[in-house]
Length: 561
View 1 (cartoon, rainbow, N blue to C red):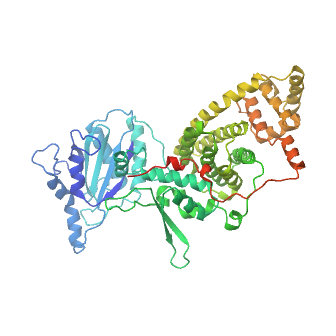
View 2: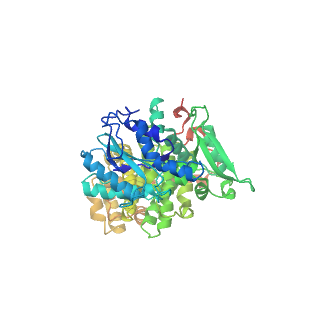
View 3: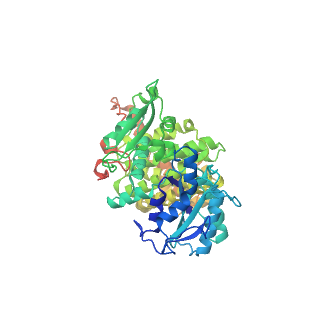
């Protein structure tokens, strides 16, 4: 059951909508199911002689009284509106049940406390099977305003109780870290324009993707503008520093033809200028030239950093863990931008899903996650790596997403745990699609019997507690490719096992295989060190067009006409 509190200043207009035919969905049999006074509230849906104006006047009596007391100054935003909707699949509620829901919510929010004869006037209108609209004028009979502070949270808490008592679907509890949902007007506008998402949603995804890729605050705004997004900054009166910013989607305008602006913090709590600065390095670090001699390094570095993040989640340091989850959320955008095309849609969906899991009421220690955040930024400049390294990275993301869901669940972060689970499903789909043919090919290239026996001895010596489980895996012989990369197999098995938790792994050989794959090729490194020529060049701080963050490639930009 979902309540959605808002305020306005047009009593008659809202009443006309509630009892009218509807704008997006057809209104069926609109009528009042509960009110401050069922006998005294005119019902245009049941009484042919009742009018919208009569009902508005009855509700506004206390507002008019307050207006006179204030010398003609009418309170602003005095109309309180709260639709309450059951979840898809919930059973049909009768008018009597909806009336009880309405009374409990106006009581819980402070609009009409139980037994308070001077409470605000309110009505509950039903014009569909699955929801009602609560409406009140927020001036009491004694001229005071109601004590409805945090009314949205109080309505949510009461709905959780109602769900349990009415046998309805139990929704996840929030913790005030979720981004603002698009309004009904924003959704209707997107539908009229043939867009699949609202401008607010689209801007939020672009901002996340760009923030994950850039190294400096200035580049954040530069890249956003290069995508056609309008940027407006707010400067401090004394220092002239940026203290806030707003974004507008290309072509998204109001009735007057002006851009529709969304502040960074209104897109998501961690997109405010102060929260962004916590995740961006200082100028000295950001301006340091970066030389990339090994094209495989971004993939290996990110995989190693994600494995390390898994350890942090088990460390008991919640601030560091939350910092790593925030960095992982950004990493998913860069992984999507660098991964081969066939996996792009699922990886973008994983990044978008995980956005809810990257924030919680636990304050993040972003400095603790610098290694993961910076390693992932390298992927924004990397060339496609469709081989085993990319699959090893996908395998690491699957395990970290699963660990994130468990971490949030243990701390009763219900919405975040659900979001991590959703991201996990997308990542598992990509991994299975990418890994299946590679694992099958490795299995076909079985080593000679002497090589297999020698490697079996290495497995038993390096991992005696796990050897039986590893050697019964039909794909265990794929591990022998470690020798072709110039490694000491026994030593490498010990190193990889130390980096990963093996007790709960379902397929140990698979875990070890991708851990080995993520290690640098010793033969290649040796050849490079013998070379007298080192081909390195500084990389620009701004992502190249070919490495534009996920969801922001020029050919995929959305236009709002």
